[in-house]
Image 1 (spheres, rainbow, N blue to C red):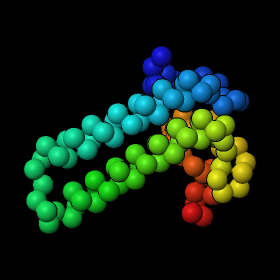
Image 2: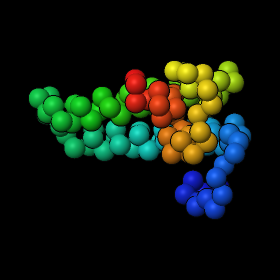
Image 3: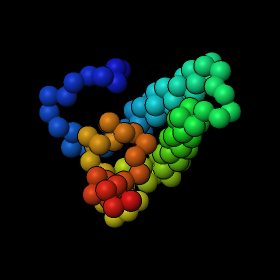
Length: 107
């Protein structure tokens, strides 16, 4: 299944756990490839931009791992801020997101 398929109708239900895991694996492998590319650039210890990029990627990898845990415990797709359901469209774009849009703005 392609992750880039266009949708003709809005989703009304959360994706199946296998589909979620597939999206999370794709997000993880993308971030790991980005880390590898940073490593291959041979950054100097004082390169703050590269260091900031590395930290941001590592932060997202942690969020992806936490999303895997939420899939396993059955809380995936529930906003950690307001406990409401995160819209499926948001989960399609950011499968590791922890918050609905309103709570993300406040976070």
